[in-house]
Image (cartoon, rainbow, N blue to C red; front, side, top):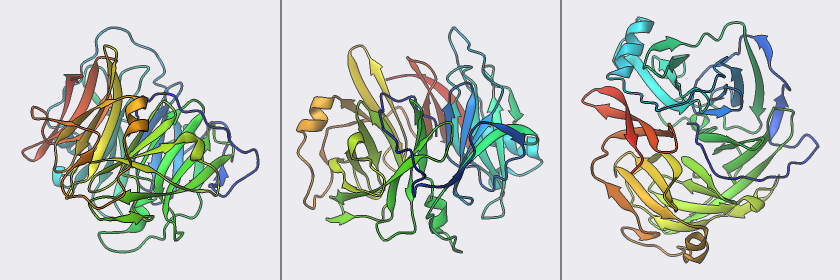
Amino acid sequence: MLRHKLALTLTLCAAMPSAILQADSGLKEGTPDIKHAGPLAFAPHGVLLVGDTLNAAIYAIDTGDDQATTGAKTLNIEGVNQKIAAMMGSDAAETVINDMAVNPLSGSLYLSVSRGRGPDAAPVIFKADSKGALSELSLKKIKFSKAAIANAPESQEGRRNPRMSAITDMQYKDGNVVVAGLSNEEFASKLRVLKYPFDGTGKATSVEMYHGAHGKTETASPVRTFTTYEDTVLAAYTCTPLVSIPVDDLKDGAKTKGKTIAELGNMNQPLDMIVYKKGSQDFLLMSNSARGVMKLKLSKGDINSTKAIDARIDGTAGLPFETLKDLKDVVQLDKLSETQAVMLVNNSGRQDVRTIDLP
């Protein structure tokens, strides 16, 4: 999931830390050994970042899609999952779109796809250009680099394989790739910060938070989706606490506790989020599995002044939000421009790509 985020400033240690097992500096031609194409983000110059949960690694792939475009952009594709399935000679029911990201240079949309289900599903990446034409991004003899994540959970059989949460979301900002996910440690929830281009440096911070709907502090719940806002990471967890974590607290080997600034309703999983500005006001837009698309006004002052939720609550609490009734069944979000967003929408068994004006 790429997110065009606000400033994130992090000082990285020079020695090889525990956050990374290995890393390749620079992009070299070859065929990346991707087993699962999951979360997506974009680094500069059209380089696509692909999170591989099964390999517990981040791949930086040179798409060659590095030409800036100007003017209005609109992406609308009906039945994109059906069209991708047909191109692969597969069935839509066996075609899973895991994430999408807009290339901020070209405005093209990239989708990470699994052909089939389960650990043996084949990873595929598709591109939709500014006219909506779909094509597969070949991973053969392509320039790429790789950073492998240390201490990832072991893969287990069953629906709740913890390895699939080794990388839950990521984004690039100002020379860093920020990665959320789980480790195999007792204090399992992690935020990792990897220096980009990958050179083996980075940080891994354990994160805990108080979950008001559950009435307890949690250390093993992964961040499901996040963004950065000024000097703060805004992280959303299942059921649906929204937590602020100061960037300065992300230190290698450290443990930190985020501030729960909102409880947005239980029995729900946050799916994606973006930050944008409309006029002089900043907003957070977040899609959810069971509670629609939420819109929250943002300001650093409100985040700082909001009382931390530290006791069990019923319903919702903290920062106020609006549920946008016109936006339903949205599973992915990304900014297409400063005034537009692109969405992946479930629609009666098919999935559509739609462009909207930012609300």
